[in-house]
Image (cartoon, rainbow, N blue to C red):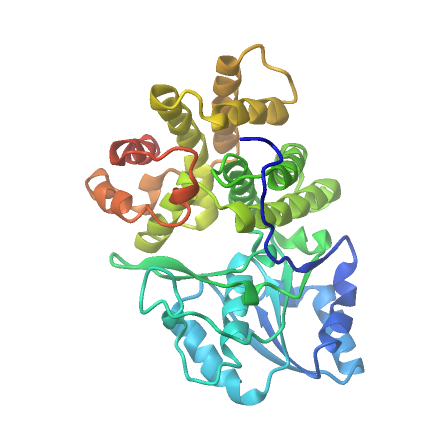
Length: 399
């Protein structure tokens, strides 16, 4: 494929990036009306000076604020109940402040508040229910991430889940759900603990890697992915080690997360995210933990599978490039680069203590069910179609 073959870039939010940008949020809210629904997580964002300042700014602009919380990964029933509660309130704009779950939930709420008919969000989830076409309109949505991992501020996906042995993790997905503004202020990352830094950081890393080797990748997303991966290289371990004082590292990871959201929204992901969907549905395992614990092994299996039956796959060259970028050195051969990449990812996983799947109750005799449910949209853009046995080998290696 020629580097400049035709490609398409779907709608993106207006992005406002930088420390202190949160102080401008109220002004952006005012562009859309005088009644805002503020969606947050449990409590952390409400215990900051930024939160107090926001409330004062909204009051000064005569904006009435309504509030709701999304304390964990949102379920369809939670979204439906919140929509029913706030639909009569004539909300002008939805403001999501939080991690990926909060932003996904806020995105889904915004998508349903103005629908003429009474729809459940289940009507629009891919892979379950009737999968109706979403016509809209959506209430304008402003996304303010307080973690650095999912990149939800830049995507059209609202990921919802039901967690049990027959559960699912699926997306409400449409261009109309894209945020009007993504306000990315790295100063908001100061409340993240080491566990969150590791899981979210490895999520961003995995999203950038998988979009870079995606079968739909293009010259523009490749450039963004490499830029984001350099930021992960220079930021993740430094932030993990130094926490709240690592301002430069926080800046880099906020940027990396945002770019990972842009690239995944444009070209898709791969096998790690294909497996993250059923693992997150069937077991109490956070999405970022799945990414962190599987990415090294999944990379190894992808490379071995291409060497076995698709040696001209351009992703082999791309994996070698990734090794050079992440290790900051030129490797003498593709073979040494591939091994160096696998070793580096393994070392990061161990250094940040990403748990194995077995710690969440995943058992070998249950893996066939996980494999069966792994072939969703993410798996379809993996650089090679993996066999069931190959997918299962990724899981076995991380039990």
